[in-house]
Image (tube, rainbow, N blue to C red; front, side, top):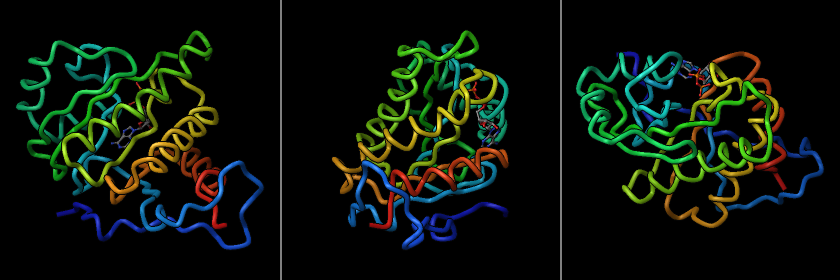
Length: 205
Ligand code: ADP
């Protein structure tokens, strides 16, 4: 099997002394809780993976297609019973043939017409509502893909800040409810963006 169990997903540690000036200070309770994982989200053997779905929840391209293929047809069956999902909201299903126990389906904003307040707030809601849904269901490890930055066209260099800020703010308030949040990057440019920006939101000091 090529599954990745949680204990093999390396914890992200800020480089001491290498941190840049930021509004955020180190929160010791978050040490050991953040990972950057470069690869296929469907391989993660954790409590919950987040799907960048569409409003129908019936499957699509990109990460959505990969998750449905790996989970098998029962996932689509359960999704069909959920009456879709509004942009910015999140709904949970079983993981079926995935190594992850749950899939949290969230719908990111379509940003091809540009990014305004509405799109920004919707993207933040995706991260916040997904984390809330995870903790409500007892999931303690959660992995996010780069929501909206593929087919939905949200600029990656702006999305990374919304993702990191929203997760940091949620963890500051609810660190006891989660063991690990994994940022799952798929493209080299996203890996680079997360490596550059993680220290701003999760600094060493
Ligand atoms: P959206 O419609 O929300 O833009 P996409 O699936 O098109 O969603 O893209 C979201 C991100 O998911 C992109 O960065 C894309 O490269 C990435 N991605 C695609 N397949 C996978 C996968 N198997 N695992 C993790 N990330 C993936």
